[in-house]
Length: 48
Image (cartoon, rainbow, N blue to C red; front, side, top):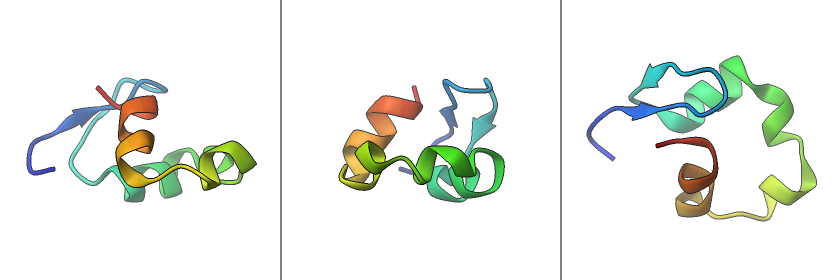
């Protein structure tokens, strides 16, 4: 993903989705349902 994505949780415009989730929303990555998802599903769920 080369453009910016908008986070559905906080509304920030981010370039690096996983880094944003790790730094700003670490509780989301600890969820067992999210751990099972692949990268494209994580982008669909948390970013526009």
